[in-house]
Image 1 (cartoon, rainbow, N blue to C red):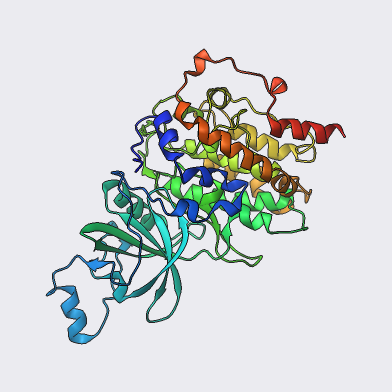
Image 2 (image 1 turned 45 degrees about the vertical axis):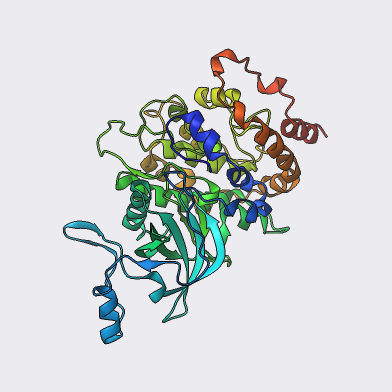
Amino acid sequence: MYKLNFVSADDACQKLMGKFSVYMLFNLFDQTAKTSKFHKIIMSDDGSSVPNVTTQADFQSTLPATSDSAVLENDGKIEETRSFYHDADGFHFQPHSRQLTVDYRVTKTVLGVGVNGKVVECFDRKTGQKYALKILRDSPKARREVELHCMVSGHENIVKVYDVYENTYSSLKCLLMVMECMEGGELFTKIQNREMKAFTEREAASIMSEISSAVCFLHNLNVAHRDIKPENLLYSKRSENAVLKLTDFGFAKKTEPSSQKTLETPCYTPYYVAPEILASEKYDKSCDMWSFGVVMYILLCGFPPFYSMRGLAISPGMKYRIRSGQYVFPSPEWDGVSECAKDLIRGLFKTDPAARLTIEQVMAHPWITGCNQVPETPLSTLSVLAKEKDQWRDVQVEMSSALATMRVDSDQMKIKNLSESKNKLLEKRKQRSEK
């Protein structure tokens, strides 16, 4: 069993990119990968697996029989108090100790996998309402995730948490988080399912406006998400008027309100990692703004600004380009994108965190404030995602075989210029642009 102890950047990548994470990383280009191949392996802080739900009796109350359970037997009522709430004294968090299955019917349907645990389907026994149930092996890290998610879940662009339970499974203590069920699926799934309808720059601006609202709420509470990526952006429903929401607070952490950098642990997904994290420096919530920029870049063209030329999860060359801020707006995909959008990306891809745009500056940028007036220019995003799906499947094979050799000193490597690269993806785009 793999163990996730994020002690260094390379260790984090190597362990996170294990048997199931290969599929998660390339979920951006291959939505069919989210199958039983990876959701069977669930990691916890100490390397143990999170238990699979097989029967309604799996989860047991952590209370003595004479406590909460006795109240239920005596008057037949289920306690209605919330497991978390805000009041004049601040935020209060105390998970319910009674058995979850008294209130909810849990199914075996797996809805997804997060950093610390899996998500299954459940139904309220009284109303029949469907919810998503996140199952985490109790640990300080898992408790931090649940508490932070509960604290911020009141925002319209953050997945809502309804309740939290503390139950045992085979003598293992678990945290069970009841959340709203996001029927619309992941951001890129919704874009890919558009069929022949064009995806425009105005739509991209509207999406980034929703994401910026969530990030602004977090940063105003001094919370760094540290894992902003398309897989963690879900739609509330399948219809056109669905709301986009941020989820998975497995890497989230409270920061100091001052300008002092207090984050040290290098938690990240390779495509979206900020340069200061790769440099093993102390960092702050500005790392979210770099990731925000990567999501925006992908939305506008269909491929990431930084990736391994050899198809690895992360390579010395990729690290070098991220740390030095080497990226381009290649033709033809970027030819029709507005200069206003490019200006915002340039501000987000500042390698110096102090010079990088803050979320307040992003929300004041004309591309965001005027998102409803942004040109309705059709983007290449949809066609690029469709055409390059097969290429990214091939890359997965090389990435898997190279995981064991990820720890290479970038200073000892010769870094190729983009023009010299023989990467299949770049070659394919060059050929299309020359036609």
